[in-house]
Image (cartoon, rainbow, N blue to C red; front, side, top):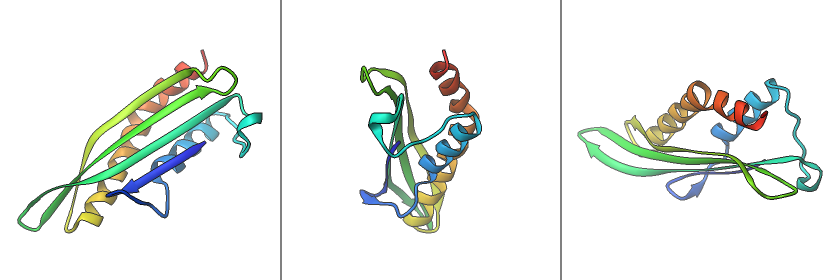
Length: 122
């Protein structure tokens, strides 16, 4: 699994989407390895929160994330989805970024994990 999560183009110290996805897949019976050559599937997570508008004291930002699952041997896509422009709010841009990541994690858990599992396990 490779994870590249950013806020405003700067690397995040933690990976909320990647960590949640890894937890959900582990709970579904998947095992992870650090070596790509010994894996059957490879998961790639990319995310970035961008600054949006400011209205009064409320700051908005938009998070876009892609999640791709590929076979290691053939390199073909098995599953791909985009969490597009998930809006977060806060009293500054950092807090709005955190809110957008939290909403993305909820969306992943509620709307995408079952589809991902069904597609990968077929």
